[in-house]
Image 1 (cartoon, rainbow, N blue to C red):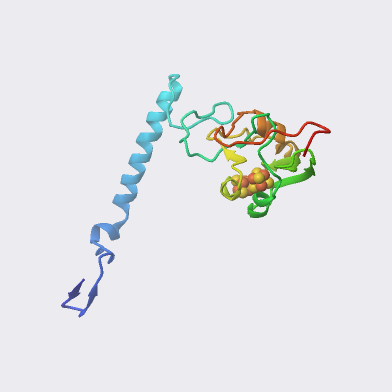
Image 2 (tube, rainbow, N blue to C red):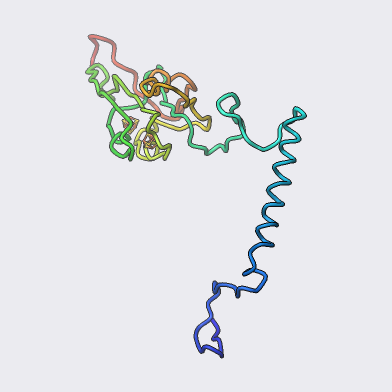
Length: 192
Ligand code: SF4
Ligand code: SF4
């Protein structure tokens, strides 16, 4: 850190730069900005009018991007056990942590499954309010909910049709944790 001998005060690394007469006149910089904007606009418009794609804009929902980053938080996936049932144990942690309160789970009880007697009879997410923060994925102790990089189709005239069902989450992109062993479910009437 240095000192300004004129003012005898400290000079910090992020001191504002001195404003020059050129900066204070404003107009040249405004014209320079307008020139850049006009060039880009006319170039994109020319490409569009000649049938080529101009601006790097996706015309959603007619077009969907395919170049999402692998870590993009897109559509939810519920992982399956080897027998296809949801890995979810209906512990409600994802619904509790969800800041938008958009996860609804109805737990059910299966006494024949001694290892995981609780399971979700209904698991739905309201995509009209989900903020795609990923906290549900972080909170899950079972790796039962993930987010794939593909984004969901979110256009609708009816918000009630924007609920994502458990069936769709389980099957639109089936995923399993093959390393996770699950004891076989007991046969009905067999030892528990
Ligand atoms: S991504 Fe965020 S807002 Fe959406 S369901 Fe998960 S926790 Fe809730
Ligand atoms: S998805 Fe995970 S956190 Fe949510 S209820 Fe199921 S096991 Fe619990």
